[in-house]
Image 1 (cartoon, helix red, strand yellow):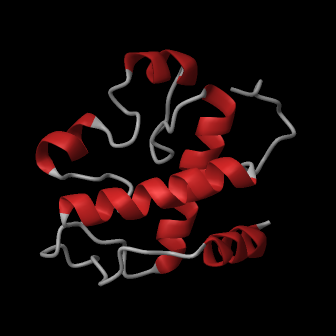
Image 2 (cartoon, rainbow, N blue to C red):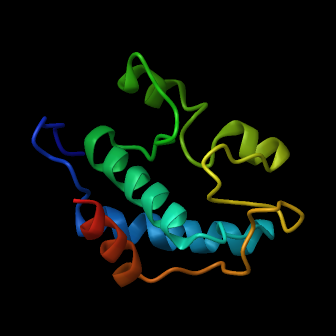
Length: 122
């Protein structure tokens, strides 16, 4: 685990690749799909990777926390979060069931695509 720093704004390549691989494998294992808009998928995976770098766990990047370290230790919102594991409800729209209006047909995303979205937002 790295120490969080205020000037660190993007994830490391290792964490980004780990979260990309995890996301693809989890989608395939659970029969869920990424959002029809790949930029949503890219931003969420980037956020998971950044939290993995900063806090040692892929804390859900789509929620507000008063104390992120406490939330990581509680594990409820570490991806896959409890609502996803129990009911296939993903607040981030990363893992969507086929009947969701925003579900695409993809269960894969390239590292280059994630980095392209990240670079466009910088």
